[in-house]
Image 1 (cartoon, helix red, strand yellow):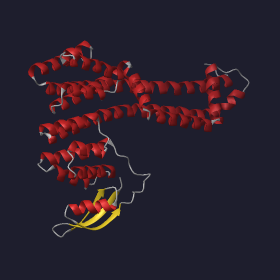
Image 2: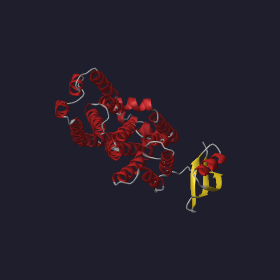
Image 3: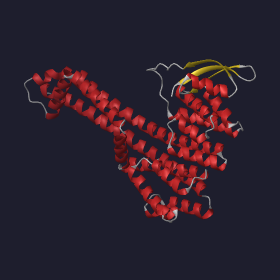
Image 4: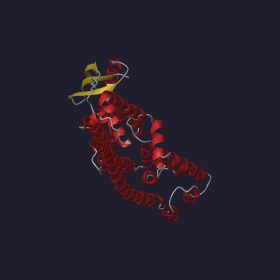
Length: 398
């Protein structure tokens, strides 16, 4: 539906400007006139020119905007006024437009849940259920705050994983670049050793031959590496490939345990947030399981959901399918018996986050020396190959 800019004179005689979505300019005039305003001008809003350099809307942008909205609501600011002021804030253009659309929906009489869906922001499913529960219980500000906190947990876990893997990735990439540089620029300088007529050690033949090949086909190497990077980028944009990659990581001995604990922490935190907002148990289990990234764990939690739906306690269902550690079962069981399951889920999330952080440090402690050792071994093999070739050619006794 097109959007129109309008100018009107309100009942107090003040000139006001605004925007409205409508089927035509005549509909804008009719609707504003029906509200008692005098319409001065109506023009269709020109489409904004796409920018190649505009930064895309990120999850952290949405979290910041919704956190500030929750703060306004907790401070007693009316919902309509709070959303309208957010639309005028200095946010990412896409987020500001989303708040403006939400404000228009609220003016038309929609509830906040419907307005949020109309904004089409990239939000997890549990956010909508938390908002729905908050509106039903009269705790919208608290529910929105819990949704924002859970989104921050998700973002923090993802950021921790990215930063944890960044250094090993840079280290390995630098090592590969160093090896390629040695092959392309250093080894070819000793290529004449192959022409000496003497039989060289096998490692020398491999190193010098590879160096000559790299030097003669440097553009082919660059092209192949670029193609590999492009293929990986395309593959990781595919949801099914990303899922396979996550499942593969989860099967590694140490790295998989770290990823599993981080995934479980996210699940427990999501469960705690939804239960605290009075979301029904079955719905909370279903939504929390949907946010789990490891397929095997998602299947386990879905089976536990079936058992809970059949009347079994949550702690017993989780224990039956080996979903948590013994400490986790005890926390859930205590929460069920004391009526404080939401608080125990929060405690469980904290426990798994701490375990994940410790395991992450252990993984990094292992990856760094292994990567350095492998890179050093490759560079050492190259140097040994060159030195052995020089020794053989010059008949220097060892």
